[in-house]
Structure formats: C-alpha cells, structure tokens
Amino acid sequence: MPIVTDNQLRTFMEAARRMGFHELMLCSSGNLSWRIDNDMILISQSGSWLPDLTTDQISINRLTDGMLLNSVSPSTESSFHFGILRERKEVNVILHFQSRYATTIACLPEPPSNFNVIIEVPLYIGPVAILPYLCPGTPEIGKKVTETIKTHDLVVLRNHGQVVVGNSFDDVIRKALFFELACGIILQSNDTAMRLTSEQITEMSRYKNK
Image (cartoon, rainbow, N blue to C red; front, side, top):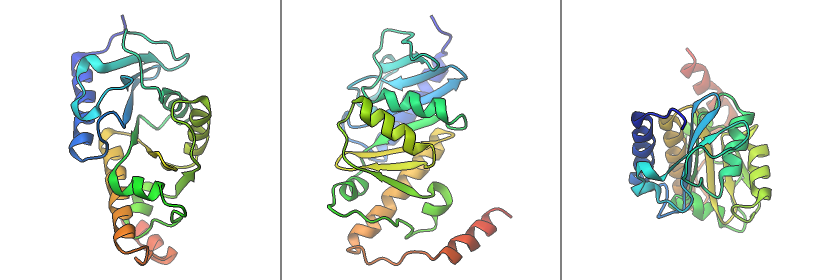
C-alpha cells in the first residue's frame, strides 16, 4: 500500500469542496488531480461529485505507468491528467471544471479568442486555447488536451467545459475564477467589453515583477 497520509487525503478533499463552493462545477461534472511526489498522484474517483467528495473517493495512482495503487477507479478523464503531469514537471494540480459563464462561452457558435477584459487573465492565465468538441473520456481528448496544455494553462473544450493547471490548489482556483469572471463580463456586455492593449498588459507585467 502506498504511503499517502490522512492529511494529504483531507487536503485533497477540502480543495475539491472549495471548488464546489465556488460553483466551478455541478454534481459529477468536474475532476481533479494532485501530484503529491515525483511518482504518485491523487485523482478524484470516476463519477464522484467534487463538491461532496469524501476521502474514500480518492484514487491513488503511480504517474510513470498509470498503475492504480488502491481500489478506487480514477476519473474517466484521467488520461489527460497523467499526460499533463508527465509533460509539465512544474504543474502539480489539474482541474476540469464547468462553471456557468465559461461553459456558456464553450457552447457559442463563435467563441471569442481574446479574453483579456481584466488584467488578471493575462497575468495569471496567459493565452487561452479553444479545442473543438471531443468525446469525453476518449483517448483522443486525452491526447489533444495534453498536447495543448504544453503551451497553455487553460483550455476551453467546445460544448464540454474547461481544463486549468497550476502549481497549487489556490493557483488553479484563482485561474478558474478569474476566467469565469472574464467570461461573465464578455457575455453580459454582449462581447462589447473593451480588451486590454498589449501595452497595458506589458506595463502591468513590469509592475508585478518589481
């Protein structure tokens, strides 16, 4: 049996419930993973509800070969969780979510390509990728999301939801919530909200890095 502490399981559970509190998903629409060391990851159980997650709904897996180390089956979307964590060593947390405004954007016939209506998007998230609809749980979506996340921290899945990555639970929640805010502004303004210029973004980046 792998060495995973009760504290690590509680930390994962509490993070999942925080994401539910912030309404980043409904019922079983989301999934979450966390790298706890170089070769061990936790993933939410297939079909579990993140807002109500319990510690016995957490799957323990070996990263290198994907071997299941306990009796809890990981999310059906686990292929891109494994793929991203293998490709990006600085990423520790991955969240697949379906918040209201961001998922509405994902269902538009022509979603916007520029989400920089608030400075937090370019500062914390960076460029946002948009992928065509791919059947959830298939090898195709796992491969495409993994490939796209090599160069992005957030990807929109058409008619499905979003995937966001970060170095901690707080980092991922911050990115997801700021993206949700930006999508809400875009929708409520009928996509007339002004975008920040490249000069404004550069200026803020310099200020932040001081």
